[in-house]
Amino acid sequence: MKALLVFAHPRKESFTHALVHRVTEALVANGAEVTVRDLYKLGFDPVLRGEDTIHIENGKFVREATSFPPDVQTEMDLIAESDLLVYIFPSWWNGMPAMMKGYVDRVFQHGFAYSFESDEPRKLFSTKKAIFFTPTGQPQNADRSLTPLDQAMKFLTSDWLFNSNNAQVIDHVFYGRVPYLTSEELENYLLDAEFRIQ
Image (cartoon, rainbow, N blue to C red; front, side):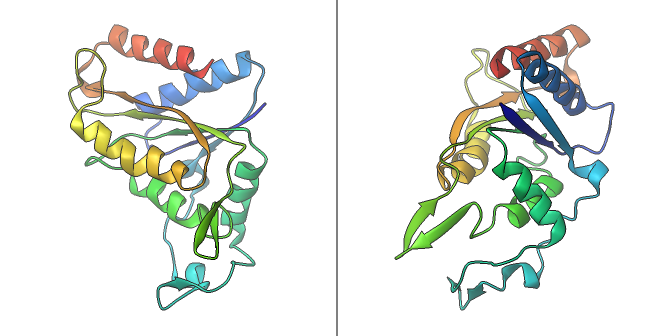
């Protein structure tokens, strides 16, 4: 199995980085071939520019994009060759970091992640699975059920993003109160992530 892990956090000492390390180890231990994409380390350009949207005129898709910028094409190729897509990013102001949102805007483009035939969506990721991990500073329900903020974020990220292209979302896991927890409590989160990735 080929796994692609994409994450966004600028600080190496963050819990997000610890989560990436642990999830990568678990995937490798399970025999996966893992490619890790650190969007900050790569210097990925998250800005969607006009030339990235030349296939849209007057609010309608008028053609398939025939070429993409080299940095975007690299990410598309990695997605295309992967069976499992893993996305790890913190919740900042109840949303993705701008770096991750820019990655989605630029990489999940019409003609790659989705397309249309006679105004009906043609979903292009039907052979792929995806899992999301989102550390957050928000409180968490005692029973680990999603809070209203987590539900909203899940709907706008993993649910919407992958339901639009037919990938199977395994889970979107939120780890709450991260800045306020002890190292033992954070270790429990890491163990949980290991379990979920198997």
